[in-house]
Length: 136
Image (cartoon, rainbow, N blue to C red):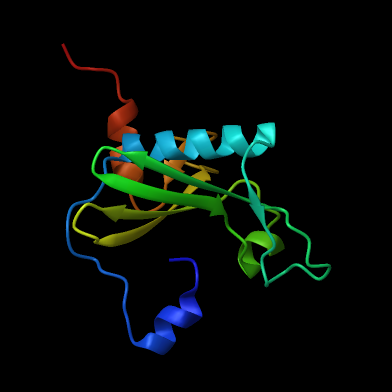
């Protein structure tokens, strides 16, 4: 899942079929990852990109949720480094029981109704709805 070049060379494409995990599940995986990274309890890998000294600094989490396997890691992209968001943007790779793969990015909202809160990019409306007080 983490080797985009291998996927592109093989002609395989990430599936967009199948169910979406609930945003609450994605935010829970994000919480688990960030807690483990902060505590230093996750294994670390040495990414090839943006790592001139080759050090193992990127924590990786593999975790299960009902019907899903997730891999989580900080975003090691040029944009994340440029904006100093490497330790804020968390990329989640999810695979459901039918092996449909999905990718999500969880960030701290910088504007709008959820400013300062963790949100799943592209699913902000669901994040707002999941945090809304129940109607009576």
